Amino acid sequence: MAEKLLIAGNWKMHKTPAQTEEFFKEFLPLIEGINNVEILICPPFVSIPSAVEATNNSYVKIGAQNCYFEKEGSFTGEVSPVMLKEVGCKYVIIGHSERRHLFGESDELINKKVISALEEGLKVILCVGETLQERESGLTFTVVETQLKLGLSGVEDNLDRIEIAYEPVWAIGTGVPAQPEEAQEVHRFIYQKLGELNPKKADQVRVLYGGSVKPSNAEAILSQPHIKGVLVGGASLKPDSFAQIVRIGSQLSG
Ligand code: 13P
Image (tube, rainbow, N blue to C red; front, side, top):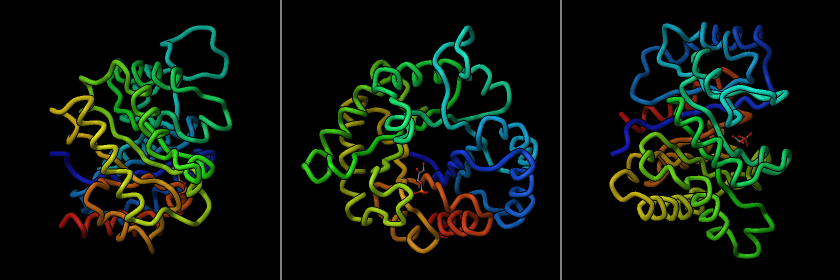
């Protein structure tokens, strides 16, 4: 069975190295002693070293929000999984909807990134999710299935090193999350599809929910049977709100 709930923060383009240090000074005492959930923060690239240093003696893990698929070379502006590994990242988020929609990332590119990150020993959080228009056209399951199949192509044997984040695009940054039952329905579908890809490893994958998760709705979301964690944007930027979400996860695991 999958292990602990994963409570992850995606800081997006927020927090300089100095602000990162400040965050952890406040955050770490708030979650001291909690070890029954896995806690992950994904800062912007330049703030990763200060995050790694600040969390050295804690259970908090640090990840990145993106990477390129080549190890090195003439790829101006890109960062490779080798580099992320060396600075202390354990995870990398791949295929976030902002990467897909603002930066034009295709499922094929995302798949190359997934393969490359796994080769370097990073764990991957692959993001999937439908737009509002797709949901209203009844395409939610088709879109999610396509993103899963193309994103995970060739890595079926490594499913135990993958987590999925279901992030309906219409719920991201809007303050309006999916209803817990609505998310649960998609999560159950994702587990079913993962089972078709690799029946032996599907239940080791944690399928996280992302999109307007806050302390006020985290319990209802995390109480759904197929929701094994959360990927939190805005509410992960404040030490107290992210710590509250961590504590809710911990209490539900206790
Ligand atoms: P918000 O929690 O700000 O809606 O962002 C969700 C998200 O995109 C996490 O990756």
